[in-house]
Length: 81
Image (cartoon, rainbow, N blue to C red; front, side, top):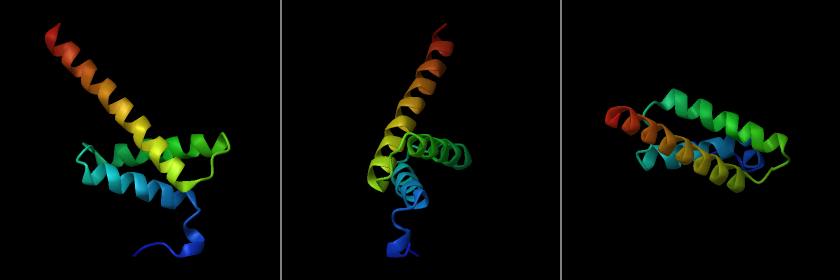
């Protein structure tokens, strides 16, 4: 069920947006780890003063994708070495 309109400014909605995108794009290997990462990223951004749910979601998605790419590079480097 979609959140009520008064809830749409909450960080929960930003987290839902980010997780839905990451899940549908097939970028999640471990749902629990991905959720933990996104929650921590949104919390960090909110501590920095960001409140816009779409900005929070997009920045969390970008951070997750950067982190995932770095982890993949590390795995490949270990295989090659």
